[in-house]
Amino acid sequence: MTSPGPILVINPNSSERVTEGLRAALAGFMHPDAPTVECLTIAHGPPGVVTQREVDEAALNVGRVIEERTDAMAYVIACYSQPGVDIARSLTKRPVYGIQDAGVLSALAVADSFGVVAVSELSIPRHLRQLRRLGVEGRLAGEVALEGSVSVADSGHGEESYGLLQKAGSKLKAMGAGAIVLGCAGMSGHRKRLQGELSLPVIDPTQAAVAMAFGYAVTENA
Image (cartoon, rainbow, N blue to C red):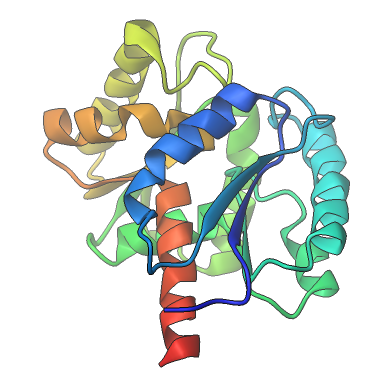
C-alpha cells in the first residue's frame, strides 16, 4: 500500500505527554507496508482544550498546521472537542477526521447506545451540540465527567485517574450504555484495562479516527 504522505495526527494542546500517549495508542497501526502515522504537538497551543476560549484558540492553530502540512494524505484532530475541524476542511481537499465524530460513530457500529466519559463538566454542553449536529443524541445513554481534578495530560496515567475513569464508566454502564467513548485523547492509556473491567467495548476515539483514515487509504489504492 502506498500513500502520498502521512496520516497526520494533530494534538492541539501543548502537552508532549499527551502526544506520547497518542503514539503508544497508535503503535498497532505501524507496519512497513501501511500508511505512516505521524503525531504532532502544537507546542504553542493551550495546555488543555477545555473551555470555549481554548477551543477557539486551538482551532486557529490547527488551521495553520493544515496550511503548512500539505504533504499529509489525511488529518486527525486528536482532541474530543475537534477544534478547527471546519476550518481545516475549508483549507484542504484531503479528509479531516475529528475524533468525537469518529469515536461516536465507531461506538454506534458495535452497540445500540453509548456513553461518554468527559474530563470536565465544562466540556459536556459543547460535546452535546456536536451530537445534535450528527443527529445521534437519541442514542446517548449519558455523558459523565471525571469527579476529581485531573488534567488532560494525566487523564490516561496512574491509579488515581484510572479509579475516576472506572467510576464514571460504571455509571454509564448502569445508565444503559452498550459502549463507552473516552471523551479525551489523553485517556487512551486506560482503554484496554477499562474495557476488561467493564466488559463493554471502550472506544479510543483517536484510534477510531486513524482506522477511518486507513480505510480511506485502502479505498484510494484499491
